[in-house]
Length: 564
Length: 36
Image (cartoon, rainbow over all chains, first blue to last red; front, side, top):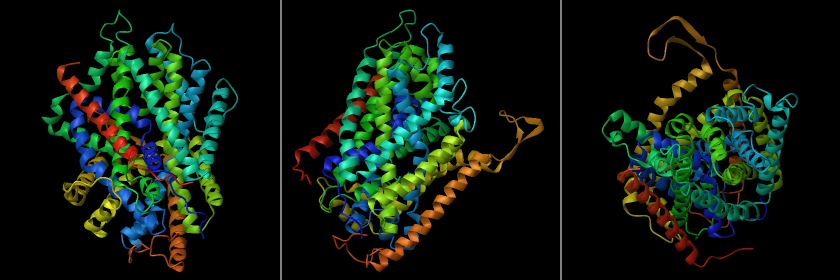
């Protein structure tokens, strides 16, 4: 039998925990570059459409599904999906809702450690960028530091404690250990005394730090009078001036729409397996509609109002538009290579860099805590483990996963493989399963009635049509577009391929053979091993739940008070 | 920044901020049972 029932302490607490799960580095580092490359201000049109027609409805469905599962005594995605999907198929598909957070954790906590590390370095002197260097030299210094600190130069580099870069690598491991220990500590303390308590101060702290940095950035004016084009206003313009050609050219429109939908989707953390777990601990008559909307709005505040006004504005103010364009295409290059150079030029930049990276660390840890919790809950209820035993078991699995990704650090191949296949591809599948179960299998009317139980606001009637038809269709279109753009490249990496033409399409005199990437293959081996583990545990769990008389196929209304 | 840029920026940031504040005002204005 499970221990004392876990619950959230307050409604605000669960909202901040879910918002904390959603708000991450992508809000500050991925969104701005994504917007600037896909139409600037005009990008906000497909972006808000994706929020209204995809992100919010799927979020509401996930909140309602989670709370209903909790009423049935279940807290893990396989069990909850089995109830909503009325049987074993949905139950085993629900494994994805544990796989995603658990396996993404294998690399996510490393990024979190990077943020902590950068914060520490800025508190204690910086990362080696000198004011006497040219901007190009500074970018190179920053990039070299990042590559060294993250062990990207070679597999096993993170464990090379000797030599010129030895102390950097030692520090990297220390920051990982500290970060990992903090994660385990807060998850072990449980929902209200651990995760909720931490998020209740971390989220406001993030908002305060973000606003402080925002005010600093918006008051920069034109930092260097010798470069009048490098100004705050031009920085805002780089991000927000609309490029209406995205609505006039079909290829651009499709690309921008796909980018916007993808940004919303991953930013809100729907389909990640977290909301469904967190919501399962909400009391049966507590609101989920207003709570879900509040968590989504909070995420959007951090993304649009902070990320959208800080990152690129500061970059343009100090580096100019062309250097900003070159160096802000990706999350890591923006956050860990370009922004350190920006801070090097900013008055009192070391202080602002320290608090900025501390804010990113808080954003990351509130997310990583949410990744450990679903897996812990799953092992508790499938194997009948105590909270302590489940925390230990999950910690061992995730610690081993961290060590794997830490070792195979060259080019961040292992990290990238997990991020694509588990942290992107599988999320689409999980979200599709959820929205189809909610709207089509369980029954839309029942689902909406469940969402409205204890609700402080009603879901607008038009959302019945949106949840049943628009969101699934939108999701499938985005998924097909995502696959056609990205899957072939990743499949080629795993299987190897022969390159017969150059990037301009001209035939090469001699074809180039690219062998399979063994690190990508081994990473897939790790992912498959996790899938097998979760399938076995689900089968064991299903037997236990049936023996305990629980309604795992959703045949009866909830008998509130049951526990798995 | 041009006029359209200001419009997109102000509408986006103000609407998101307003929605967030409205949501939190609703959440915080209701009596919440704090459990031990």
